[in-house]
Structures are given as C-alpha cells and as structure tokens.
Length: 195
Image (tube, rainbow, N blue to C red):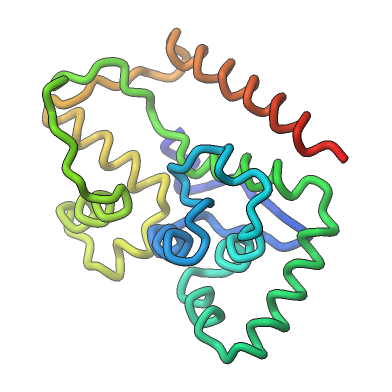
C-alpha cells in the first residue's frame, strides 16, 4: 500500500488525467471546493456544484492550478466552461471522484489507540500534515509537493513510533470490515447517481 503512494493508479475524468493529490492540492481544495476535502463525508459531496473546481485543481500540478484560479475572470469562466462540459459528458464523473479520493487516503488502519485520553489539537488535518512533513525535514515547498497519501502514511508511522497508535497489517479482520463498508457505500452511491 505504501508503494502506491509513490506509484499511484491513474484516474481520468472527462478524458482529463487526475494528478496524485499533493498537500498543495489539498490546501487549494480546502480553500475553493471544501466539500471535496479528502476527510469530508461522501454525503457532503453528492450533488455539489464544486465538482468543476475540484477537477480544475486535480487535473494539473497544484502550482498550475493556483495560477489558473488567479487568472482574470473571463479566462477563468472560459476554462470553467470547458471543464464543466467535459465533466458533464462523463457519466461516471461522481464515482470517479469518490474512487480517486478513497485512493488518496488509503492508509493503514489503526487497530488500537494507546492514548484514549488524548485531547484533539484543534489544528486542521492539512496543518497537522504540513507540520509532520516539516518535522521530518521537508521545507514548506517540499511539504506542499508531498503526495497526500505519503504524508498520511508518514504521520501514522510517527504516531506508531511514539506509542500513540497500533497499526493493523493488510488483510486483518478490521480491514475486511472496512472493505465491506466501502463496498456498501459504493452500492449506495451507484443507486443515487443512476439517471
């Protein structure tokens, strides 16, 4: 599973290739299309009009996406119209987005939290991941270029080393239950997105 962070599967939506989600992508998404932040519930995304913004961000490198969003409004409207037509022409767009997001956050399952009395930090997940990457020696720019999946894996590994969590190996009972829950969710999504 960790290797998939370095060599991810390719995803396409409306014929456009989706890039692996980096921390830079995550911050842009949280800013302009928050319903598509990777840690949001699927139900928040269903029917959201911001799918076009999400696609505009993840179909290019995060720096290029930031530049596109800063262009004059007439340029942005033209690009948005092109993206919308391509996404609307893809009958599997919503399912592709969900599959893509699941792949970006596919990390080891925590089977036991050692410190049940730990208080939440109050920091947003993206902030916590950025700090983790910088604690590991990355500059802010390098942290922004880090694939989300690798940042999550690194954070979970550090938590395991610090004794805060025990991670389940692939194929355990809990991962089988999670797989079944994901399949159930996919079935419900398929029923909701059928024309």
